[in-house]
Image: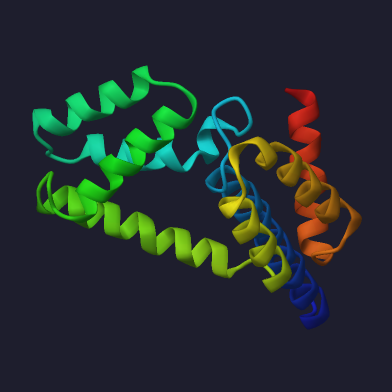
Length: 170
């Protein structure tokens, strides 16, 4: 028969794994949101890809599809700006109620994910988002270096080490 201590220890390990996975996902997602592009962030973590999937899965009109196709054809800052305009139009209801609800849910999820991060990491990510485009790559690297060094806490450190290992294996 399983003892209470064994059961409790098992639950603690599961909780630690879940928290670690959440922090790893939040860190990767936050780095992708803060200016990462397809070249610097995994497509599965890209905020633009998540919004695109949510919007195209809805019963949107051809205007949204055309806008997304035009945005995908662009690169760099022009693509980011085009996707920002699409996001603003979606939130304003320009593509219909279903798309508006999907865009609102995405915003709520983003806020929830970012709220899981330590305050000093949130501040560094806010600085990253407001930095000029030419400085973002260096700032992203500084954040990852600080995370691996443990400046944001042990859970973020573990997540950052896993993220760095994934990037070096790719």
